[in-house]
Image 1 (tube, each protein chain N blue to C red):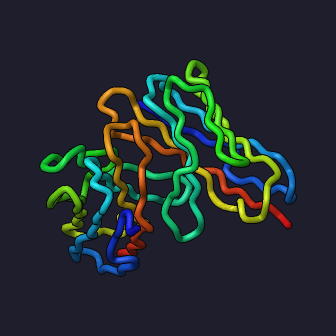
Image 2: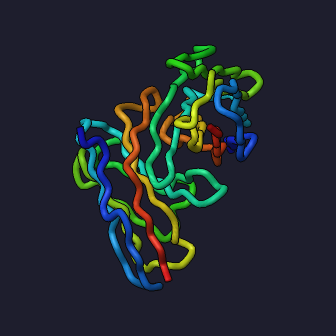
Length: 113
Length: 113
């Protein structure tokens, strides 16, 4: 069972470069999420997609864009990377609104120099 | 705005000890609360999910309680083992909209053999 798969696992970017983090889930879940995790701050929601075709901002959306390509895939794009975006990024999915367990990917370690 | 706090930030106990991790939240209008485990360099794994109408959930040596009115949850770990060493996070999902699950910063647990 693959669950939630994220790529790449590790990435180093120079300030101003762009990149896309890819996420796919094989559990037929409706909702998908992108979080970032920084030391001492827990996970903060960047963007979420309640269902295919919809996306909404979370707590810290600035500097990011997302695309819900289809029900399986939800990508996160950094258009012009900044050192403040150095973090660990997690993709997650859930079957329905709130009522079900959230499943997480293994994380993507991003360093912006 | 919902805020989730976990105390203590870190905890070290000898093997075999029973322990309690605490989670508090500021807005009692929640749909559910989840406890997660995170191993170093890994994603989050769901341990227990408590719906707002429930008082507790149990899984093996783990027991999670929920007191919505006081905005508190506890995770009780019985007979701790070195394999329990990890970071434990709690997360609450609101009952309005339901997508913006908010996480605490976590408690880092170390169980000494």
